[in-house]
Amino acid sequence: MATDSPLIIALDYPSLDAALCMADQLDPKRCRVKVGKELFTRSGPAVLEALHGRGFEIFLDLKFHDIPNTVASAVQAAAEQGVWMVNVHASGGRKMMETAVKRLDDNGLHTHLIAVTVLTSMQADDLSETGIGATPEAHVLRLAALTQQSGLSGVVCSAQESAQIKTLCGTDFLKVTPGIRPSFAAANDQQRIMTPSDAMRAGSTHLVVGRPVTQAEDPMAALAAIDAELASN
Ligand SMILES: O=C(O)c1cc(=O)[nH]c(=O)n1[C@@H]1O[C@H](COP(=O)(O)O)[C@@H](O)[C@H]1O
View 1 (cartoon, rainbow, N blue to C red):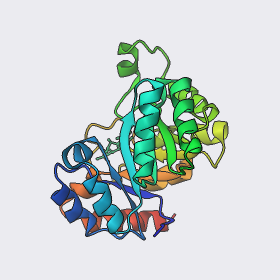
View 2 (view 1 turned 120 degrees about the vertical axis):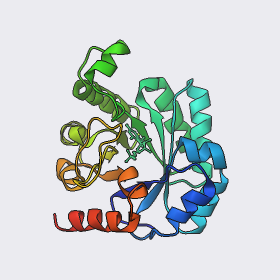
View 3 (view 1 turned 90 degrees about the vertical axis):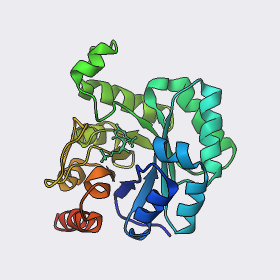
View 4 (view 1 turned 180 degrees about the vertical axis):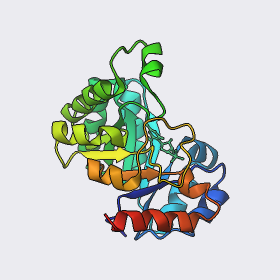
């Protein structure tokens, strides 16, 4: 049951029950869902089965980063469980990314493989502490180009970089953007943020939204407000 909505709701919950309680309020025709490290570490593949059973397309966000063979095997394992999208860290480099793409191709697996560029929680100071002197924008562009050359479908980036990535890598290259903050929501630990409609205008292809919906007093009202904002643009 595919959706043409750009929205991906991050099910960042500490248990299968809590995640499914939220999922049962969502409509798989109106959004996709993201399963991340906390939920998957606690509930394992059972959460994927439960969400697939409810008709959702799943972004499995485990941000793999390891030697090429290990990452390719993990990506294959994710794809064989039928997830719609899975990600790696672009900083794992060309060989790691190319090996993962080849593994999917060799096995006839069509899961979208994308790479995280610079986390949306990071700014220039955080990068510089890790030995990277480039600005976040410059580093994101460098990693986006490397990701595209390595044959992946797109990147995770901040919506603040979507327009430049669109120019550099084209419209078909996916720009999956967390750090989405509607005007009514707190920034939390995110640094490079944007509103849903500004992000779409900038060229994001998918919007990852977590706490502005999942931690809202009325999650469905928050989601409806985001939908309404997107529809009016
Ligand atoms: O890969 C991701 O999804 C991701 C990459 C990134 O750079 N920043 C980022 O926030 N995310 C994820 O996107 C979600 C954002 O959630 P909220 O900040 O609650 O909207 C979380 O599940 C993060 O793990």
